[in-house]
Amino acid sequence: MPELPEVQTVASELDARLRGRVIEGAEVLWPRTVGHPAPDEFVAAIAGERIVGVGRRAKYILIRLDGGGQLVLHLRMTGRVTIEPAHAPRDPYTRLVLRLDGGDELRFADTRKFGRFYLVPAGEMLPLRSFATLGPEPLEEEFTPDLFAARVAARRGNVKSALLDQRLVAGLGNIYVDEALFRARLHPRRTLQSLSREEIAALHEAIVHVLRRALGRGGTSFSDYRTTWGHLGGYQEELSVFRKAGAPCPRCGTPIERDVVAGRGTHYCPRCQT
Image (cartoon, rainbow, N blue to C red; front, side):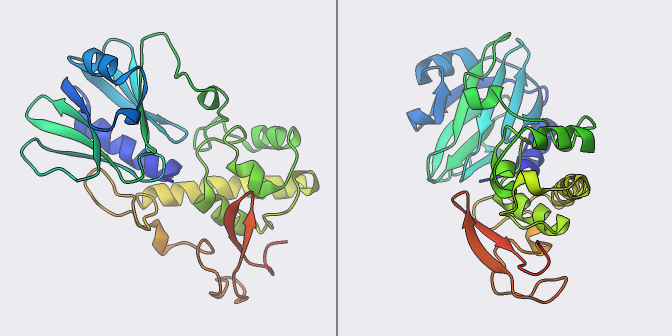
């Protein structure tokens, strides 16, 4: 699933490419792609809306509309957004299309059909409990070491599970949790209660560093993720442990190991991460 760097890359490109444009109509090719409201209501309500900007919250893309509402997109595992001329052939997995002024289309292709669009009226919030309980954004100034330490102190369990929980920190997923834990030299099964103040500070620094580096490379591409221009991300070239089982640790040379923590494949150095 795309994580913060991938979603932010897509959101930034959409902001540059969509700001000021009018949505002239919509086609819903897979009804469940629209999570709210009903597909026919979605099509009727979105027509004529002007896009005033595009942002991000956690792993959600927020397309702000001039009427005060917003169109929220969750890419999930295989969702991809492109902007193409209306006459260009469509991807066979296209699930939803927004017709734009000027003859272009925003196309959402999604092989596994997990991605969702939500049209949220002005003054309302996305009708998902998971959205309302999201934690702080790790690349904003408010995400200080002290704030992170306070949130960690209020939680229980192992550090890998906690970081995957969007209520602790928003936007992290399996790739960047593994990479941040490696940078901070923390074993994924360490309990939160066992972390010292210095280790929590190191983890905070690692989260911010890894996310900024990944964002600078346009995210990480393995199979499905592409930018709106169809480009691959580049951070997979810098990964230290994720999907590196059996390869030598870049710090000490010990073979990277793979475990399953919180139901997710987890990669770490058994010597460096304690």
